[in-house]
Image (cartoon, helix red, strand yellow):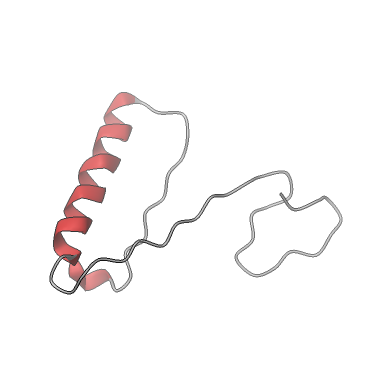
Length: 64
């Protein structure tokens, strides 16, 4: 958590917030399956009305 009044690194959460990050790698040819699973999980969370924000970024975006 970034303390108030301290400089932030680029990409760091705003003061008082805590972010978790994960890097998931898969073998070549499995990226589309991972992208599909992440999209399905995100849709389920949205449908259930979860109050916790979860962002998924797929890089490169053309795999899914």
